[in-house]
Image 1 (spheres, rainbow, N blue to C red):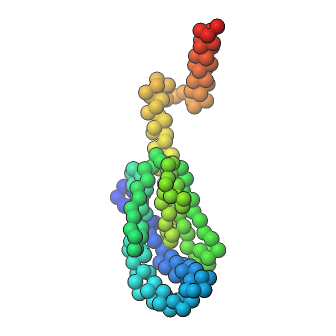
Image 2 (image 1 turned 90 degrees about the vertical axis):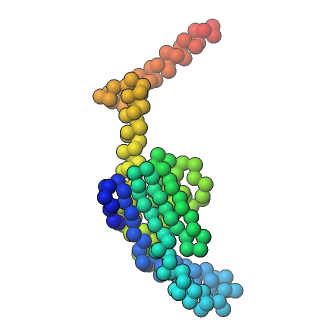
Length: 185
């Protein structure tokens, strides 16, 4: 993982081992389909001559001050930006074949995501746990900043604990409900 000038901006490196993992995944799928077996040499040549050199070039994952930016795709390219306040989870996955090649898949999940596999999913991230921790730390800092702004705008003191604020809010709700009941009767 490489850090840029700002400590909150992080770019990850794509592991070269991802190429071997993806190659053997494609070969396994081709062999399982049986129809693809005669095409395996052509697929292998195409993969190593054209696709593999471009995989690392066209895949990137960056943590910025505002969110996570992902660029991926060799044939069909896409760019996804997930704002930090929409991130719900960052998961690291490593299946049996991935363990063989020591490759990880990092998935950033967000509120309102449209893809089944997560808002951002990249195979071959170097140091995925460090990146995950950095994203979650920045997300938590953003939430704490938003909570302190909300507390300041509602007049709740910053020295007041969260439990006291919740108790005060629940007491206020109880009083409102009691007033509503007296109006109905």
